[in-house]
Length: 120
Image 1: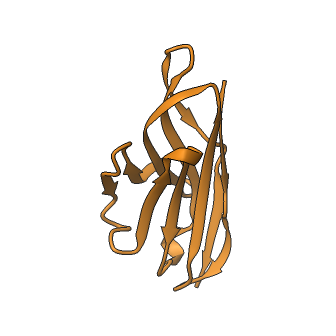
Image 2: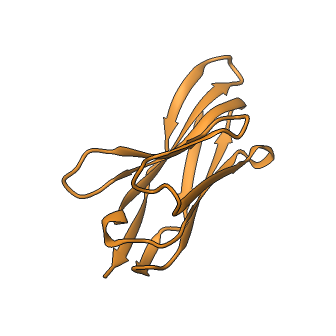
């Protein structure tokens, strides 16, 4: 069993910053890509940013230059530094990880989400 636990969400004014964290724990042998997705009210879940085990990153166009994804492989943790936040960044942010378990299963896991609210 693998768990992903997000933290760091909250209420912030437009132009402000937040840092999200997601820690993976459990029966982990290795983690491939990790990422952040978000779902605004009434909309589909969309990719925000991903990072692979080698550190290569990918960002949605809407967050390029404002958000930075990083990871600490020793801690099985992925971070999302969000700067210059806009009201349209308001959403529930979900962590995702591609995990190879100690039983040699490759599975995709999701966290329960953390709410980010940006006020204008």
